[in-house]
Image (cartoon, rainbow, N blue to C red):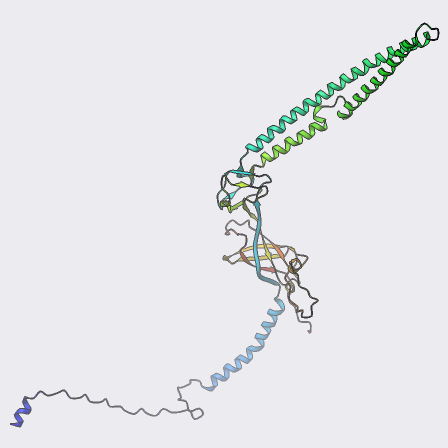
Length: 386
């Protein structure tokens, strides 16, 4: 019975047998460091030859290094350099209202191209007034010349009258001795003579004054008279101001900050409207250390690289070196007489002329960071102790 029940009861799964682990064979150890020996083909012999090979190459490396040092050092390089260009604030010396603008932002303009115009009406009115004054001055000068001729005629007439008075006086002076002419008639003739002489003198003085107004030349041309020249100068000034209402480009370049003005805006005299940057005249302003300028001279060849275009190279020459360090122009230069003075290597400004004739190179823009390398042609040479 028990045997039958055991057969009817389901048999549970038996636990799997544990894997049999076999001990690994002992690994041979290096007797010196108790490290397993992996195997070194060649062993100590290879290390020995490598060591001797390195010792043999050491003199050669030292010789190459010494040669490189002695023949090197002819290139002076610095990364304290920036691209610069001629730039000017466009303005005019007359005040007015902007009428129209002839360029757009970042547009390339040619020399003489119209940039913007001011309202010309006030200046045209001033010019017309100056021209009218000039014409009036010319008429006044002609009137002065005619007036002078009239004064000369008056002087001539008065001289005739004085001559007649003198004749009458001389006759009466003779007749009064014989009692033919009364004393009253004699006195009247004498008074008339003196009065006419005074009038003649006055007319002569007036004619001299008028002649002086004509510059001492009664036949002077109206255009040579000082008053005419003064009026003509006012016309020229009015014309100049009218011409300056049209602002043109002083050189070829790129206009920038143009949106700073707009039609209808009032600009005072000499107020900057926008800027013009020259794209043809480019140079590099570098500031190398004073210790790097020992053999740098104007005219030496320079290689220029710009951070914006790392794969392009420009060529140029050293144009000039500043006669003073940059700190000499500082607002508050260093006071080296203080007790806590520390020597600091100064930087000397240097200008490099860049050749931009190669049109295949990308355009340079003012303010870009650059690196320069100057070929001084002077190697370090042997140290002084040799």
